[in-house]
Length: 446
Ligand code: ADP
Image (cartoon, protein in one colour):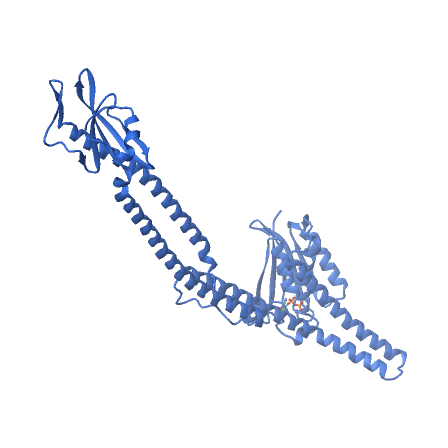
């Protein structure tokens, strides 16, 4: 199996090795050139002291050597005439043609090989300069450097192999761990088994453990969302089942045999009521979804909460809730938002207060401003809510008491809270069983 994870590091390492080899090659050439020139200069200067011109004659001391440290020597006049020593046959003519350059080292290609040559002045003889010429074949000198260079290449290549091998082993381990994670992800994807989690312990690499736990956290959230989704679907189905069953039963009743007009009227009334209920549910759900998906175009206008509350409460009284008295305590409260959405919230709070009041009860509705916020407070003196149920009333489809609220779907408060939050506000609740409840809608003051 190809470990793609190592391809780029391997290419980078090979490139770096090649670059290092090229650098070594260039530097070693320069170093060899420098070292050979130094060697030939040293040998020529040392040997030159064994030569002198006395009374017009060349004197050669015992210490003089025609060959020293791979450097060969000849003594010659300015015109190239050799007085002592000799050139090897194969390079003689080239060397003889090489003009004398005192105290200068130069390179010369003779017979296909490179030679270094250095001339050092000994003195004057018969009015002309006398010189010692040292010459050295490059291949004799640079074999040591060549070995060093080859050694460096071998060392670098060896290091490259070790590093590549190590990287490959690491890549194998990483690939194995990633493969395990992929298998778990594939398994979750194909079976939708949200209970599975990735292994977070015993990882060789901390980064993989961190990745696995981040994935697990994401899976936790997904599992929770899935559960909510399932719960939501089953709640909707449950809420629709009763009205649909009633509609079906009524239709069946009407179709069994020919009925009289009043029977048909009753059937139609029942179907109308249940259809209206389903319509309310669907409308509320759609509003919810639109708000959830940010598909609602919220109008931003200045809202006078006193006016809105007054209008909503009048409408409620007109609906025939004569047994419950609504008392208004209106103080200035101005906010900014979408009037149609804010009406939904106030309507819902007032309807609930009426619905859960005792017969002939009273509902107080107050508006005002406090701590930089505008508020609408709806207080009833009805059945109240048990403390342990209070935290659930903003959950979708939650009803504290199914029998007391057969008409409702448990969507009013969650929808209201969502709208309040969309406006940058919230809803507070205080309640005591048998004494009543107080719901306060808070909105940013304008
Ligand atoms: P619905 O739309 O069915 O009325 P809500 O979401 O508005 O549902 O309310 C959820 C539940 O909270 C209600 O079924 C009821 O049990 C409880 N509740 C809401 N308001 C009041 C209130 N003023 N007094 C007592 N219980 C209330």
